[in-house]
Image (cartoon, rainbow, N blue to C red; front, side, top):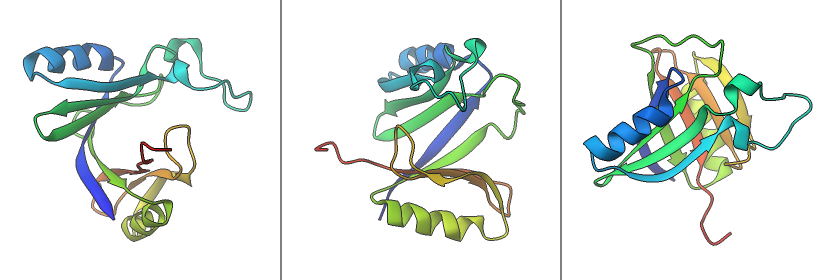
Length: 143
């Protein structure tokens, strides 16, 4: 089942500053901040030194709503107007695959569904209407 849909902001290397700003301006509760440097070393895809302090994923709680954000990877374009995307959190990898398969119809793959350090099934795509989606499987806290 789909658990939630929320906005996801793509920042231009200033996500930590934005997290602090929203924490104060919106009384946001910071639920987590993970940098690219927090990822385990991967010889096949090393993280460049200028990316290690950039935010890979941040999660804020504002009232009853969730706001997520990340920095773009160094060298990736940051285009104002396309930097607000949508995150979908689901409860099972099978549902993540189902949602991904439905949304990719006529769209473009950014990151195929795969297991990551933070989700057993995660993928990104742009649908046929130009909306960027992040599909993530929420791992139950009792695991």
